[in-house]
Structures are given as structure tokens and as C-alpha cells.
Image (cartoon, rainbow, N blue to C red; front, side, top):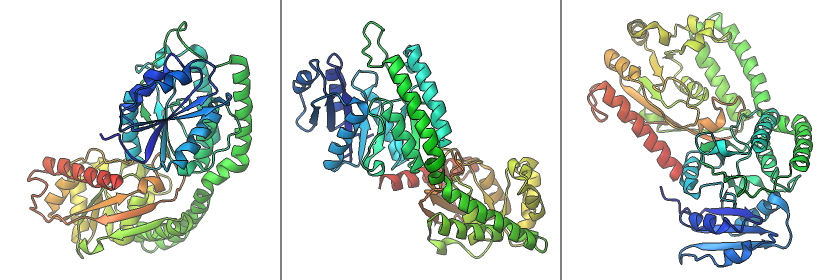
Length: 472
């Protein structure tokens, strides 16, 4: 992929890395046009080596020289300020000691393409060089991961990796509590409290032998400082972090429980309309309490007759949106729905077929519903996507549509993942869109003349639409 994005620069903080900095910078310049190096009060030959680096005509090496050592937190702040002043939207950070592979930058940018506006963290793992990590560093990483989860309710594989992409506008004017390398943990925690999405992509890491390794880690002093920082962050999480992160979810949860109670009373008289009524109510709650701007595009494509709805699936709000627009719709329910304390009996009374019943039993159930004027909703992926991308489409929906002679109404959801994802019960803010794609009448061969081909081609079509929209 093209790594020469004009909105992102590379940022390398360095302190006494004279032996490795030239190689890191040269390899980074091969994949990035603009590289900022913050020389954090180095006392060795780091600066002279950087000044001698041969720079291609179309590339820029920008040196920020600090008169004294401020620690990694201070160096990052100086680099962010320079990048922001130059008009960059993102800064990709990597260490100057040679641990990170600049060749992994395209993988980081691919993560940013999938999750724009997010912090992308390069996650180190065993098999990719992590086994060479010193025992004390391995313990510090596990220690940091544990406390990050406590402070944010987010699980991350690697909170200590220095290879990251930061969205500069979402960091604000960064003022760290600490100035050394633990400031990177602090950055993640405060970003999570501000509801900045955080995602990980796998990267490689290189650890030289103990004799060659340059480390500025001071076990007693640094571990003491990390412990104090985590104590402060835990206290702040109680009084600021969790309330800031989850207040929308709390309001929406209370409103949703109220909606369930009210609709349950109506369910005594008309159980089949419980989910559509709840869908309309929930959509109102999300739009007003979660500041969600929900747009329906191309609604005229939906015919006034039963259809087979298919859609990409990354949020429970997908179901709500379709039911609120076409209340007379039956869902092929996943097994967990029937086991759910809240929805199980309601789904049974509403007559939703179980996905585990078998194809012929489901088909017979759907045939009866379609004769009564119901549309059918099936998510071909079978489960919600964990990363917002589109995954394998199963053939069931296309088979049912063929057997029932129903037109297929594809629905494309954008940014539902950022509103209410499978991995988090936090309700976020997002400009979400539900688009009715062109209808596929029975016998339409635009996506192939066989069910298997239709499922595969439709998946690629969805992926292309979403990824083109992200790039635009």
C-alpha cells in the first residue's frame, strides 16, 4: 500500500542511541516522506550522526534538539508539538534503539485505514521476537497491561510498545503527569477515558544480546515511579475516568430498561411487535442520548413487499435500525438470543426461528411468515464483526432467498462499530449511516448464478464499499 500519506509523519525520540539511530532513520525514510527525530539531550554522537544522514530529495529529516534530557514523555510532547505545527494529523512513533522494524510501518498504516481516528498500537508477541525480551521488562509489560485493564476496562495485549500511531487532534495539548517512558501508558489511559478508540496490530521486535543492549531502565526507581503512577491513575479512574467513559452508557441503559418495561406491557397484547416497538424506542434513545447522527440513504430502494434483508454486522444497533424501518420483519435468531434472560422468551413468542434448528425447519418457518407478509433478516457473517471489517458471508441467506423466491435487499451499515461494538458495552458517538443498496430480484445474476458465488461476490462488494468509503 502507499505509505506516503501527506497527513502523517514519523516521530522518533532518541537519547544516546548513536550506534543504532542512523540505521533506524534510513530505513524509516524508505517508507515515510517526513521524519521528525527528537534528540533528547543526548551526550553521545547521536546528533552528529543524524546530521550526516543522506536524505533523498523528496524526503525530509527534521531534527528537534532539546538542550537537556527530558525523558521519553517530554521528547514525545516536543515531537507532537512540532508535528502539529507542521499541519500533520497523525504521528507514527517508533524507538531509536533499533527494536522496531520500520518495515512494519505499512501494517500500522493498514490498521489506521481500517480504524481512522484511532490510536494504533503495534503489539509485540512471541514468535515475532518478544521471546528475546529481558525478564524484568516482560514483568513490567504484564504489570502495565493488568493495571491498564483495571483503569479503563479495556484489555490490551501490549501497553508498553513504543510503535504507535497517534491522532494528534484527539490528544489535545498533552500535559503528562510523568516525563519518562511510563508516559506512554499514561497517554493510553487518558485517551481511553476520552473515548479515543484504541486498536492493536501485530508487529515484530528485535532485542540485541545483553552485551549490546542499550537500556535506560532503572529497576528500582522506575518500578517505584510506575507504581505511584498506577495508584494515581486508579484514583482518577474512580472520580473521572469511568464516569467520563461510561456516562452515555449509563443514561442509555436506564432509558433502555424503561423501554423494555413499557414494551413488555404492550407485549401482553401483541408479542410479535415487541422487537419492532423496542427498536423504534431504542433508536430514539441512541439518537438523543448518545448524540448519534443516524442517516438513511437511498430508502426508495426498499420495495413495499417482503424481502430478504442481508447486512454487514458489527453492532446490535444494526438490528434496531432495520426493525425500526421495517417492523414486520422476522429474524433468524442466533442460539444465544434464545438463552438470553431478557430476550429469550420474547423471541420465542415472536416466532423467530432458531439458527440451530436446521435448514429445512427454518425454511418451513420462514415460508409461513412470508405468506403473512413478513420480511426476513439474516446477517450472512453469522456474528458481529470484532474489528468493523466485513468477514466471510455464509450461504444461508442466499439459499433462503432462492427457495422463498424473495428479492434480496442488501443493507450497508457504516460506523456502527464506533457507536456500539461487540467488544465494548460503552456507547460512543458516531455519524452512522444505513444505506439501501440496489435490490436483487430472484434470478438476478449480477453476483453470480450460484449461491456460493453470490455469497463470496457480495462479501467482496461490501468490503470494497466500506474500504473505499474509509479511504475517501
